Length: 363
Image (tube, rainbow, N blue to C red; front, top):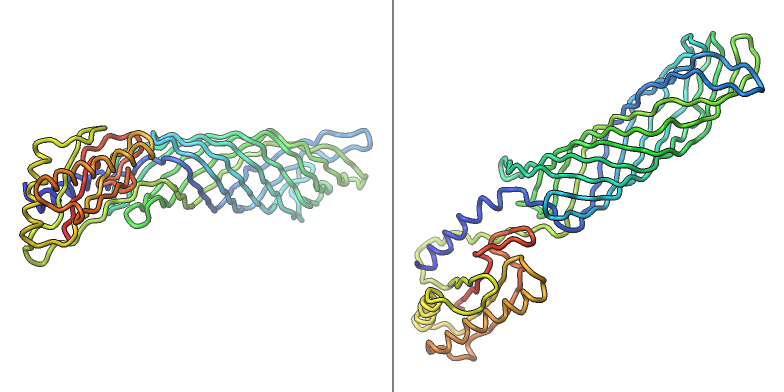
């Protein structure tokens, strides 16, 4: 097989792999922002001995906004774990006091907390125009502070005011889709997701006046359910980099690059490898090359340090065979790259024959 055919075959074989979204492996960070809807609260406040509080009080809020930031770790098999900080803000829109509609309302509900999340990426091999599409599901638990600031309402049924905060156990469910942009920026994904966040009922102090004008106090609690639609970004630091694709030659030219492949965890030459090296030596004399670069590589199995040594051993084996074929040793430079420059991008732990190679470049 000529060099040109070998390179073409390697490129064709690598295309399906590059088109698929690779599982997240190692450290990543993410952030998102979007809209938040908070379910309405309806509660008969718990009375204190100091007064008789108004009856049923309902709190309704407008659509607000939510932001999240996270740092996580991908295990290379679709499973991810992360730590998340979040914030939600909703303004009060309307309500009832004493079972009757409030004519004046105001205030805001702030929520901020920390969550521990677990995710599973559904790697279905979906791809549109070079963008890998990966749905994912997640769940989390943590702690959220409910901070009600000057939440108030007044009307025929009396008036109420809540200006208090309460921290509570929180839980959430997440469903989203990641759009991988690895072909443009390796490791970068855009995300769209829905989040349901709930907490145990916060206990908040409430004060106000009854319909008859008497001063009243008590405790207010109610459900706290949130629905968030977020758009975000995620960046994985250890994403495989796609191998560069050489531009097609404008006209036929003598072969200048040769690929020699190796068995897994081996550095000895096969009969086919010796044939390719012999062809390289012949071409070196024909084109009168002044320098021959020999670069060793390994696949993404084993440790980085071991594969670095293995790639150098493979390069030295090829250099020795070139010398045996009549090339002066001082014309050859040998270097090893371990698994840092894969011909076919893969996740860690994947045995890829095309990455176990030595490249011979005639200069």
